[in-house]
Length: 115
Length: 113
Image (cartoon, rainbow over all chains, first blue to last red; front, side, top):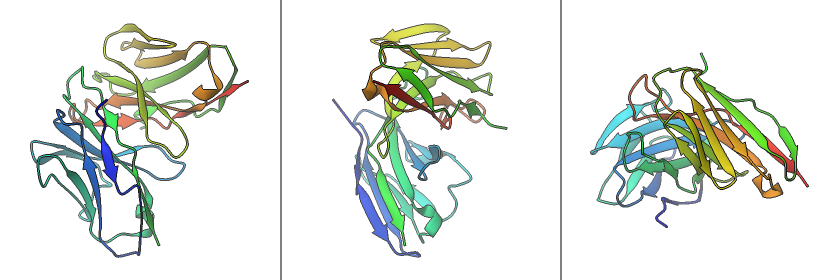
């Protein structure tokens, strides 16, 4: 069964360092997303991406964050200068269509710990 | 104003019983609704997806959607201890576009053997 894959599963970094989280969406999917979940809290929308452009972003997704689809398969989230409060689980998700039949599938997540 | 609301629980049911999970949403124009199961430390796992009013059944799971009441529910029949998890309701946010799915805070379910 096709799945969304994410790397790394866990990353530990020092405050102020840059972090890149990688995702390979399901191959025939066109819409890509990043979500985050701080420990014990709800799943929060960060950004959606379609046709090589950001289509929606939340207020969390400030100038420290960027997304890119550098080739035909990878979808990355970059955090330029990490803060302690960026410590969270980051989930990539994808869907084939945004219309009514578009089920949204999640990857296993990348746990980011900022020290 | 909260956009997707769920009772946080915990909801406890005995093994074999029916678990009923509820979700309300604020955006009347929302079209697609998802139920995910999330085990502690794991990613959300899609268990049901519904976009038409009425019931949708898949095995032990039934999703019920009432757009007029802005209400979506999930019934789990013959609950098993392995169903113990947090259940997340998610809604396609119509206020901005279709391209944003937002989550409720989740309901913790505990199935007691």
